Figure 1: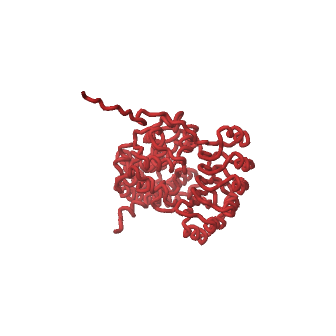
Figure 2 (figure 1 turned 90 degrees about the vertical axis):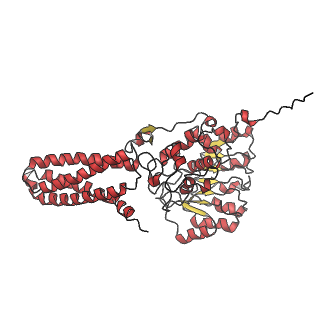
Figure 3 (figure 1 turned 60 degrees about the vertical axis):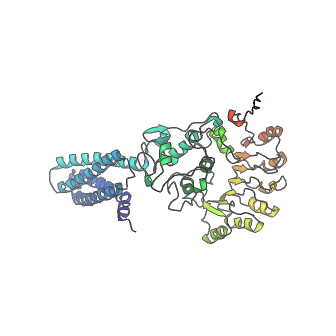
Length: 468
């Protein structure tokens, strides 16, 4: 069934800009008319006033309809609504006065109208983007009217998973549409009780099952899907942030558990350690600055038919990421599809793949790669040399491979390499000093974290007391 309320209301963001432009133009012409040489501008002022008044009325009507969705803070909405109606009335009065000779009253009406326009616009921006939207770039992350800065966590193992790790992500990337000021889909994500409550579509997440949780499901949809979150044009979550949310849901971490009490898979350990050094908050965009032509739709369809998940890394970029996670057995013919997008490919995930030498050579020819995940693949000291031409590589995950210090040194020419993960490899702890010296700009993660022993980790068995 067609929802006419939704259709009419959704025109508000489009129409609302018209009265702003035309009324500003009308006031400019009106003030110029005060000088004799610009007296002929009076007709332009009257026309601009007329269009501004009509569009202000339409904006007020569509805004009223949009507000009926119940997704906005009532108190703030009330002020925005009546200020908008007041502006529409003032615009009509201004248009009528534009035919009168009294310049004094016209001047004061235009000044008062401008003040109402500024307040109305500010309230509308707050409803749409959250409190402090204009200044949050200077002040950090916004939570309602309180500004919260993401801080470095000195000891991440002692952090509370939701409060210290997940909530700052939600406040930064989701609170603009899901907070006290605005509840798109009836959903708030700015507090434990609201997340538990869910929205109009029901529960937000299924504890223990990220794949069936709407919160995670919307994050990993294609950016071009209508239900992808955050919406197109909004700041997107990084790969690390998405992985952390998946981990939080799938491990039943809930809202009160500490990190040290939760299982920490190999792909999560780097993200947790990054929180101790603020790498997530200051994460560099691993996308080349140079523009690239768009990959042909035919080539993309070939990759998708082969089971490769291919997505744009950003909604406004032609660069792509490729993920082989859904392919049970990766062979050389499957890897060969990467040749069709070698210019656009910047992120590649090949976890647990068993590849031939020729396949490693194909990967080594994707010169624009900046992120490469090869955890638990059959990469060896012999085949890693095929990757030494990836001069743009910044991130390399070698967890669970057979790489030793000898193989790692073959990549010494990759001077843009920033993060390498070497947990469960043939690297010896005594060799890390040599490797670090050869790669002075690179951070190596051995994954050898020591977790504190909890009282709940052991059980004390007492022998039964034998009665005589």
